[in-house]
Image 1: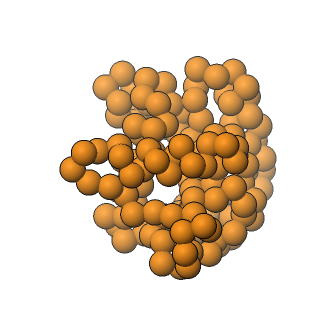
Image 2: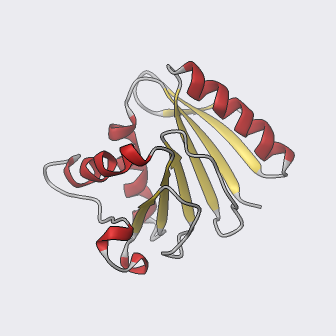
Length: 149
């Protein structure tokens, strides 16, 4: 079964948090798919990944950027895994599709948004019922992560 991690954002926005987690994945030599739940958020997210730090960038692309298998981080709104990723990130309300192709799924949501919080609770129940090993992490005041469940 795929390991599922729920990341409850509290203090830092997705644009600051996601790049750090993607960097950690790439350091482990994992390939990544980032599934975005809102088509309109895809391009701004891509821009954030190019510019989030002045001294580096995260190599990534979308289906419009050439062969997906050459992208270490592939951004999409679909359920495909065209770059052979081990890790799936779900952001901006994306819902999980089939998870068998992944070792890990990271579902990130804004804890200050009641709709996002309720959706995450529903996904937690569904994924646990399906037998996935799910853990819940909440962002602390210092930006670190505390395991809550």
